[in-house]
Image (tube, rainbow, N blue to C red; front, side, top):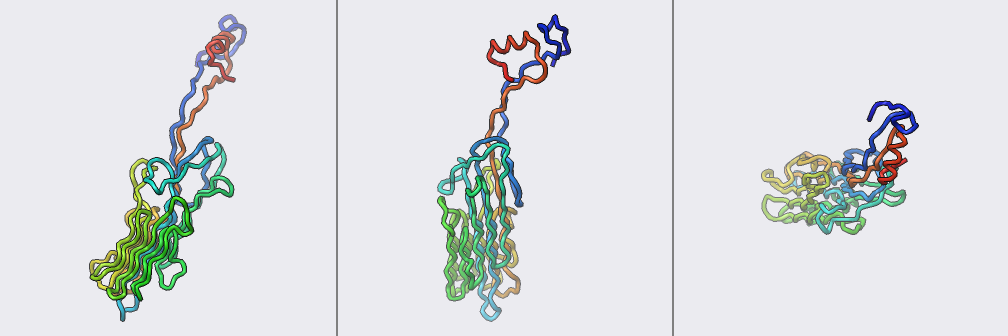
Length: 308
């Protein structure tokens, strides 16, 4: 910015001679919510999202007389958009209005045997992206179904819970694995990237279903893994006693691990969810602040660079 000039220098207007500031571009911005809050859009645009619900809690072990292992909790529902998200889990970007505020809900992980809590990105009044909490591994349990289903308990070879419940398109998760009564091993919880493993003979419960890697924050992070199922022995557990589903990364929506038999501890809690919003780069207009000389106005108008 120049110094004040006299009327002879500026063509009759006394003030400050300014330089035109050309248009610039605001960079893309990513906002991560690890707890519920409010998102305020920087500009009107279509934004990418990652919405992960809380994982379901793993099951406790059965009575010591039977030594059944506990089943793994289902992963929280996984819903995302953007070119960095592998198909078929990719959805479409959603519109927001610059300056408007939007409600974000981040679901907590379920305690042992309890379903996780939904996560929600409310982007247009009644329009939302909602991910369902992972199924809780508890027998009998009406909440075994969820974003991903919990594993089935080994008692009477229970089946695992259903994933993608209620249904979304693309799907938000997978079913849990079934338990094995003869082997006393329980199934693993479903994950966003695959079904939970079934309980099998030997000292192994079903493996938790795979998660899905996402790069919305830049580096790949794996979200929504299923919890491992427990087994009847006391060594080599897939779901170690009391290990929370949040192990390996908090706010990832992992399901809680089941526990091994011969154990008095409860299953692992599910990991809490997360909501991430990525806004694209957007243009900022050129500016002409302050008082301009008549000569500067004339020059910029002729050049097509004048704004008011």
